Amino acid sequence: MSVRLFIPRDAAALAVGADDVAAALAEAARAAGVEAEIVRTGSRGMLWLEPLVEVEHDGIRYGYGPVELSDIGELVAAGLLTDKVIWHGKALGPVEQIGFFKRQTRLTFARCGVIDPLSLDGYRAHGGYKGLERALSMQPLEIVDEVTRSGLRGRGGAGFPTGIKWRTVHDAQADRKYIVCNADEGDSGTFADRMIMEGDPFVLVEGMTIAGLAVGATKGFIYVRSEYPHAMAALTSAIAIARDAGLLGVRIAGSARAFDIEVRKGAGAYVCGEETSLLESLEGKRGIVRAKPPLPAHKGLFGRPTVINNVLSLAAVPFILAEGAKAYFDYGVGRSRGTMPIQLAGNIRQGGLFETAFGITLGELVDQIGVGTATGRPVRAVQVGGPLGAYFPRALFDTPFDYEAFAAKDGLIGHAGVVVFDDTVDMARQARFAFEFCAAESCGKCTPCRIGSTRGREVMDRVIAGETGKAASLELVADLCNTMKFGSLCALGGFTPYPVLSALTHFPEDFRRAPRLAEAAE
Ligand SMILES: Cc1cc2nc3c(=O)[nH]c(=O)nc-3n(C[C@H](O)[C@H](O)[C@H](O)COP(=O)(O)O)c2cc1C
Ligand code: SF4
Image (cartoon, rainbow, N blue to C red; front, top):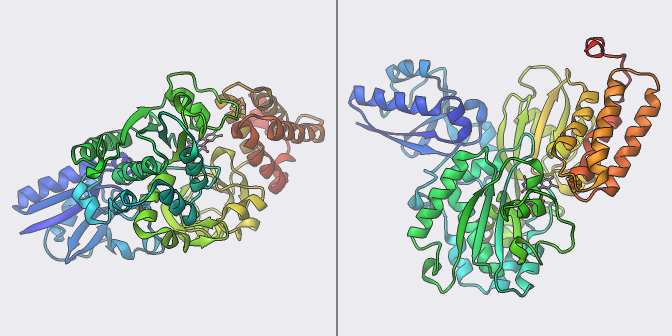
């Protein structure tokens, strides 16, 4: 008898014992004389179910999770390694019928959790490299136009139209141009870049190759944060496999076009995710923000025209080229087109990766998809868009996930990290944390950010300690925020006011409380 199992090797699954579970199941199969093929995949993104074990029957994959080592004896005794679908406390039924998964529209993450991430055959069998094939039959400007018409906007935070950025680099005259992939993924509660790099690295390799063809770049770099060793390993292997298969190198896919990619490790500064700081770091210097202009599209890496895009922006490109701009544009609302891989994190019962068309409301995401808090207490606040994003109260849960709708509520989508807090959160402390984070991560180049963040933290300390003159202190916070917002060189200083002011606006009662006695005594 033979059986086919799928177990993720994604870092989130490894962290909760996926390797041990895979080894124990392999051993159990050996002992039972069963021929078991264990395919190590990326994650399906239902993180509360990891390690998720899937068993294939008649082409349908049945899930069991979260599987602990102590479950394995029982699962095997119940017939997990036979050709029958078994029922057990950990049985989830067909994985793709699980509500969290079924409600998604997986365009970018279509293969993640499905295939062996390093199987080029698996990638091709699920539509991979069709986009590149089509791009190779097009003129560079046609590729740029296709991306422009898809409506794709940068998924790294700023939401800038990808096609316009590519057009600028396409039009620039230079002896060399570069594609730089921003895989620094520093936002709190975000992991989509990591998941796709670990779970489907070829999609990024293909997306970057198409970008190279479009703008006339022959070299790409992926700047990966040092905390992502599994992503780095997956990318390095995928690049070597693509090179061996002639899909990277001097004549990609037998064409006259050249493109190759190198992986570079960042050193762990949040500001190195900011594109110009990233370029400095990539050039071997300290990560300090460059003044703009010149834009990286004119003068970027080593002074050459450079496309800098987030992992998810580049990973959306193969679908757009393979299926056409309209197929992507048809999803979404207003000027927010296509799908967004949203990451549900923090105090949430069902956390994970949820890819969906723009337009779903924040309330649907938190209450229906995430099913409220893990603690079971009421949801009080949700921070969207990383440490520089605004806090949303329940009263704003009808806000649709859409760049403009969030901006209209003084918020931002950013990299689509959604971090949930229950009613025990102290929003004055969260406001203090925003200043503290900015002070710790500031590159120090401009005064409003470098000094303003430290002054802000000090004032918040006084507010929290309940010192007299609270109204004047809060006025000073608002004033500082104004200076940082309009006087900072980059969004680290410029957007720190968003979490601070949203906390103050939506949760004013937390700023008016009596002094925290225990803390005051510290
Ligand atoms: C402080 C700061 C940190 C940032 N961190 C990231 C990051 O980790 N990943 C990312 O893709 N973009 C990050 N960005 C945005 C980048 O500067 C840039 O807009 C983005 O890489 C462009 O790619 P996109 O157009 O595909 O989004 C950051 C910006 C700032 C100001
Ligand atoms: S805002 Fe902060 S991080 Fe950005 S350039 Fe100024 S000091 Fe550096």
